[in-house]
Image 1 (spheres, rainbow, N blue to C red):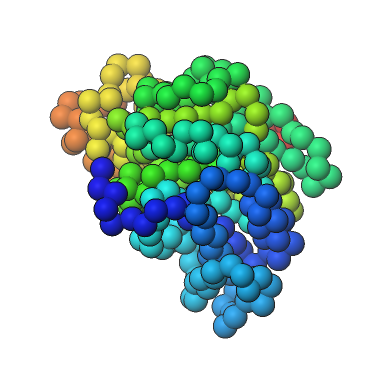
Image 2: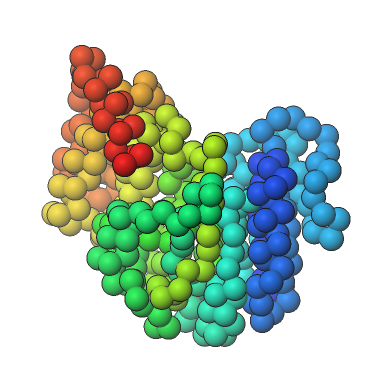
Length: 328
């Protein structure tokens, strides 16, 4: 692990989308967290419109204005190409880091075996009421992370591959020497950025997960991407592409159970992409399926990505069912 090129300390980058009130809440929360080391806070503004300046950023914070801007994966890759300090926390303006994360970081950051420090997240609706996500809690339980604290885990890469996202995208403190190796993240990963980073970082690296006390609040808002058609129709494909891309780098992970599951995931992803008219997602599934097949050096049942699929009569039904499920 080459630490020589990184400066001592923790850099926190707040990714912002020209949302002054949310950004101020995120910055206020960071001000009361004690990380026990020199901390540098930077706002990386990626406005949805072309602007020449942003006036709502407090002067005491370093500020990077992306002009012209781009999509979220472009923004993330810009940040990953700028890492300067030993530790990095990339968060967002609709997230609120809690003091517990600082406490856990102070306790474990000196452990050379630890490359990722994170923990339990909490979702709050627009009135401040906590929302329980049963699927998220089930994943944590299956991974043995519920009610878990203080021990270094080295087995989470495989569990992330099998179960899906376990770590909050906005509250992962990562050694920059490790994080820099994920750059650049393929643009096809799109909405599955957190899973992609999590799987890459946890390969052969120790993780501290605080499962007793929340380390972050995520605030729902009107423009929450979870409810957008791009997420409803494309997230499943992005998650599948992320796993396929991981197999290209680590083909030994493939086994019979994962082969069957990936075949099913590709089929479901393709049905969703067709139902929401996302030709780019269908193309991504074909391309990454073939790359994974070649990398693994054996026949893989990725036929759903290659065979034409006609579901015209049920597109509307699929869209309706997905929208009902995500709001349940």
